[in-house]
Every structure is written in structure tokens, then in C-alpha cells.
Length: 505
View (cartoon, rainbow, N blue to C red):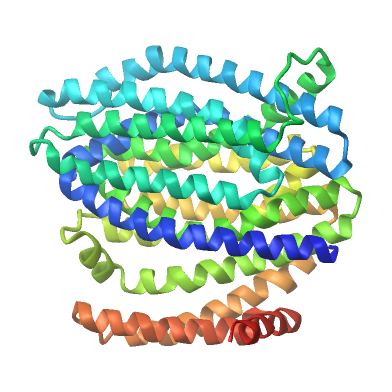
């Protein structure tokens, strides 16, 4: 990577981390307020209803990945005409996808809500309104994705961070406004206000893109080769993203069928914690992902491999610093955060954090695999493994009578299996050696994990109240930072960090 690229990467990472820290603080406070204002039952209803819309729009994830990849490749090659065609085609495809989701949502989705979803009969009207608002929010999210992808591909992270901060502040305002409505009747106003927030965010993305990138203008593209190329890429990505939808919202529907809204509320709480934690690594990866795609587009495969290895290792170290105290102090963290902890939330949170730690290693490999454009075999293999999660989880809870926690235990096992297969596939896609990955990433992260977690586990055996838990978390964080600095970072990375610290002092 050039000095300019390194400087831009460092700047973007810093901007995204400021955005992440602010977003996480507001996000956790907002979640606490929403859970208390809505109550466990209504919160669980909103979580599962919104999840149905996310599941219906799983194709959107494929299109978003496709758009980001093609825009980044066009920027790497410096082809302006091709870039403008990709931008225009992506907008057209996303609009058509939004209409398809609307059709699917008003037929299959509405049928499922009215006939299969488990909720109290008196909640029918709020559930229907909540579902329609969630459907509209899903459509707005889909049509805004080309603009979002363009901002990230151009590495304009300051603008992306600014719009995100505005979004979380508006959601904080929505949570605070719930106190204006009568208790037990807050679900409908909450859904309507969240729809307004989505509309404002959508408009902000499009307005920024029109002003910041005047060279990009929508026009009907008559180059059918680009349309075919993008749809082919998105088509194979769809298979992989279908598995992701099944492993998130599909499992949420299984939990609803087994335990009703109360279990969905526990999953929703765990998901909020998981989302907040993954923001740390997501900010770093969002800054480096365009670099991975661009270096491959420029033909520098060796640089791509090095970026993937470094990103996978550092991503894991980042999430380790946050996840370990939460894993060990889960009961006290949730009690301090929520006051009232839903049943199963502690186990759900721990298992979902472990899944996120595996995904942190995998995500850079996914980006590099997408950059090659040869994703057919990749998505067939990985997608098939992950799709098996849902039927296996159903067998566990329905046929074998295992506890609901087994759903996420199955997800963790399949995620690990998928990562093992992913390493083999990436060797054929961009020459990333399995031995190199094991030596530079897996061995180091396993060593750091064992040395970091083992003494902390013994420490937390003596914790029996919330204030001792707070003190233990502070001590564990200091220990984790020391272990990661000594064993997790390479020599050049430690030198870089020390120089930055000296400059700040």
C-alpha cells in the first residue's frame, strides 16, 4: 500500500471509531429506554415483526455487496464511464428489488404474521401497523443502499459517520418521546416514528451523493453486459445471503414458535449487545474493505493477501478486548444495563458474542473473495453449510426437546465449520495459503485467547455483586490490552501504535 493509502486508511479508521464510540453509547442507552418503555412483550413483538421484513429482503444484502464490489473495482481501475454505468444500474436494480419486497411482504409476509406468528390476540392491530411500518422501512433501506455503498467505496467516512450520528440521535429522540404516550400503547407510535427516522436518513444519503459526486448521475444504462455481470454476481451472492437471513431472522422465528414474544425479547437484548460490540471491528473493517477490493482490482494480489491476514488478526483482537469482559460478567452487565433481565438473555448473549468473534476473522476473507468475482463455488459451499443451521436447530428444539439455547449453539458450530471450509476456498480464489493463515492468524489468536481468558475466568469466580463485577471488568480490560499488545500485535504494529501515542502526548 502507498503512503497516501496508509494515511487515508488511518484517517478513516479514526473517524469511524469516533462515530462508533458515540453510536454505541447512544445505542445502548436508547435500547435500555425502549425496552423499559415498551415492556418485554411489546419489545419482543417489534423485534420479531421487524425481523420478518429483514428476512424477506435478504436479496438486498446480495445487491449491496454487489454494488460495493463493482464501484470499488471501477474506482481501482479508474474507469469513469464504467463507474457511472455501475452506479445507474445499481439504483435501477435496488428500486426493482424494493418493489419485489413490497409484493412479497404484502402476500407471504402478511400471511405469516396473521396466521403463524405467536402474540396475544389483543395485540393484532399494533402488530399489523408495526409490520407495515417495518415493511416501508425495509423498502427505504433498500433504495438507499446504492448511495451508502458509493460513499463507502469512495472512502468518504466522515460523511458516512455524520449521517450515522444523525440517525442514532433521531432514534434517541424517538425513544425519549415514548414517555408522551400511555403505557401499553407505545408500540404503534414507536413504529411510526422509526419510519420517519428511516425516511430522513434515506433523503440524507441521496442528497449528499448528489452534491459530493456530481460526476455520478443516474441514467438508463443500455450496456446489457454490465447488467448481466452485476445480476450474475448478485445471484450467487443471494444464496450465501439467504443463509445469513436464516441464521438471524429465521432462528428468531423458530424462537417465537417455541417460546413466544418473551424469548424474542431475550434474543433482541442479546442482539443489541452483539451489534454494539461488532461496531468496534466493523469500523476498522469498513475503512480497510475498499482497500482490499481496490488492490485486487489493480492486480496486486500479494498486497490483497497481506491486507486480509492483517485485517483478520486485528479484527479478532479488537473484538476480544470488548467481548471477553461481557462474556465473563454477562449477568451483572445486563442487570446494570436493563435492570430487568429477560430469561435466556445471558446465554443468548454469550453464544452470539462467540459467533461474532469467529465472524470477525471471516469478514476480510469474504470481502477478498467477492473482489475476485468468482464466487459461485464459494457461495454454494459456504451457503449450504450455513443453511443447515435452521433445520438442525429445529430438530434440536422440536424433536429432541433441547433448551432454546441450543439454537445458538448450533449456529456457533456451523459458523466454525464454515470458516474452516472458507480457508480452503480462499486459497483457490486469491492464493491465500491455509498454512499462512493458520500461522499468522489462527495460532496467534488462539494463543492470545487462552492466555487472556484463563486467568480472568478464575478472577470472575470470586465476583458476587455488581460493583465487584465493575472492578473485575476494569482489571480484565487492562490485562487484555497488555496481552494483545505483547502477543497479538506484530513488531511493526506495536511501533506504529507507540509512535501515535507519543504524538498525542
